[in-house]
Figure 1 (cartoon, rainbow, N blue to C red):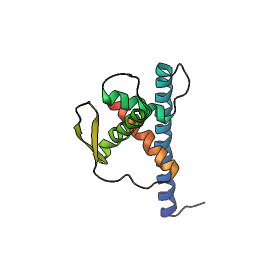
Figure 2 (figure 1 turned 135 degrees about the horizontal axis):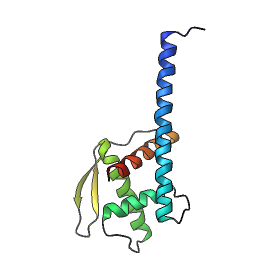
Figure 3 (figure 1 turned 45 degrees about the horizontal axis):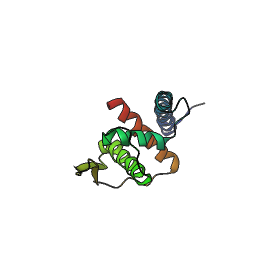
Figure 4 (figure 1 turned 45 degrees about the vertical axis):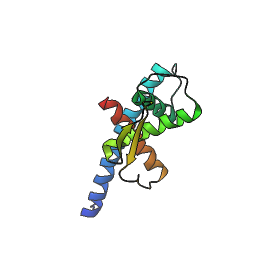
Amino acid sequence: MFFSNSAISYLCKNRTYMDISLSLEEKYTQLVKKLSDQFADGDIMKIEAILYLIGVQEFGKGFLPFSKDDKINLMHIAVCKIFEPYGYYRLSNTDSDGWPHYETLIPLPSLALNEQTNLMKEAVVKYFENN
């Protein structure tokens, strides 16, 4: 059986995409396990909890008794921080209470749910690789 050049190109592109996706999934799974062991007594952490940890790290004041609104703000800080290297956000200032504030440079793209999840996982993995 022979494949056309376009079919071979399609298969190669999909193979590469699958390999990258698998590698990302493996890295993310390892990261979740490590964080879960360290911060959640082995319970599997969800992405929201990981974003909360990143927000606390970026806030820089350690674990404090945060209000519900503060926890949401910490997760927002995390989202801005992990997408900063992609050019979506830039740190604009830190207020007198130490809260970082980001400005949107370009809006996040509209993606399908699985694409959003993969982008978030990729950004989280890169954050922990670089910090």
